[in-house]
Amino acid sequence: MTSLSDVKIFSGKNSSYIAERIVESLGMKLGKCAFLKFSDGEFSTALDETVRGEYVFIVQSTFPPSDNLMELLMMVDAAKRASAYKVVAVMPYFGFARQDRKDRPRVAIGAKLVANMLMAAGVDRIMTMDLHADQIQGFFDIPVDHLYGSTVLVPYIQSLHLDNLAIASPDIGGSKRANSWSKYFHSDLIICHKTREKPNIVSEMKAIGDVEGKNVVIVDDMIDTAGTICKAADMLKQTGAKTVRAVASHPVLSGDAYERIEQSALEEAIFTNSIPLRQTSKKIKIISVAEMFGSTIQNVIEHKSISDKTLF
Image (tube, rainbow, N blue to C red; front, side, top):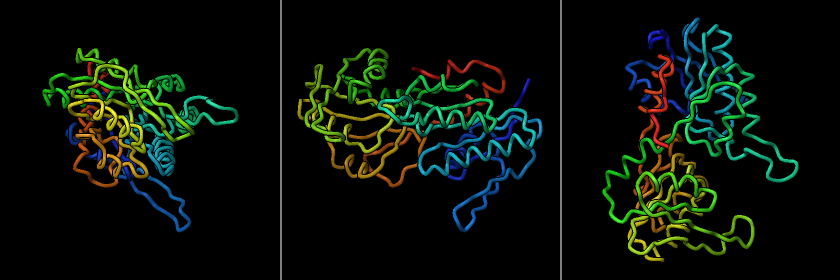
């Protein structure tokens, strides 16, 4: 049986913050890498220790810039050319996952393209968390270990001991996720319904469900510009909610997201550390998923089930 002594874990440059915590949870050290950048922006990668015949895990979230994805592909290629036994891409955040279908004519399916590139590079397995669309797992012809941020986020919500708890979805599309949380907590479910005057401009938002006196937790897979979440929080507060919190796995937080969160009715916004924050905020709390990924890595190499590591 494979053991941790047969495993090497490497990290891309921008994901070392979580990779270091993953290897620490396993009692290991991060593998040595070399990154060289040329004056025109091109770069090269190299694994600075032998991986022949070993399980190689490469930790890299593929958030922008796209150099992070390219770096992952090149590290996978380097490991395969160095005769690694198996190469596993550990992607806490799977970038381009919002491009999972043709929602209008003549557009690329970016998530499928990323899957094709990873398999072409030689990846033997994917380990990721909270894909924007579950069907992305079917884009791969290799095993995909799909973990859930709820495994660490739910215990935090439980620790708050909120009475009159209600789970909310920021839009109709997220109702399935919110319903899973609601069933787990045996709590009320609220759906926020929005209408738009034009693209990216929400003209009106209403709450479907009982809001009065509730401690509301809005759940989503990611928060990008924070426009919808903050508008939902403000609306719920005005409708009679006692407190409003937001919970999401991926803190994409682009544009004016930090400022919107600070100025909103949100008590706090809780995320995992799948993506590093660009700045700090007194309203943002980060919960690490490093230990969850570490235990999953150990289960994978020991050929054990990983289903008991996740909630929903």
